[in-house]
Image (cartoon, rainbow, N blue to C red; front, side, top):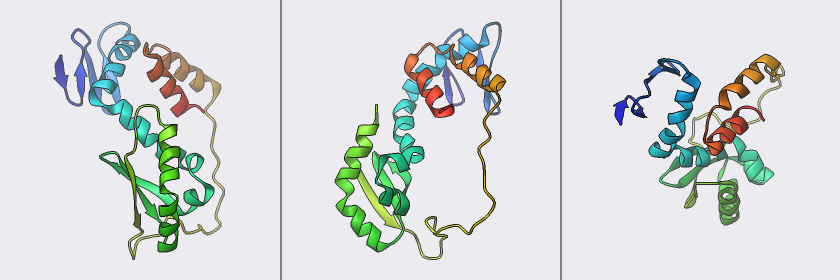
Length: 174
């Protein structure tokens, strides 16, 4: 294996990290990327990390409505999920719910497991992320046009590792 930047490149596959993309020399570039992407994710341990960090985007689905409203995940450090909690009353309440929350979160994971949940209060002087925002203009999600969706699907279909391919589909087009 030859090493290039963040990537361990499979011998015979000339691919390079350029900006935010990957460029492969020669014909059949999609297949070349598909050849080494799953192995890179496994070698670097990114599969487990992606799995564990998925709780950030699914937080509201995985915990109780109260927990989602008054606490949020801020980091994962050595298998411990750190939550930022709105105030001391909610910190106490969530301590009682901690084991149930830990079970729920771990049951939602495929590869990773949290060993503990630790909670911290918002620091004084920081903006409270739980404060209700003032009414403002509505923001709408714009669905990509059919051509972009079809293009994405055709690109991701060349990834041979089914788990990797399905993960990409579920994270991008729900």
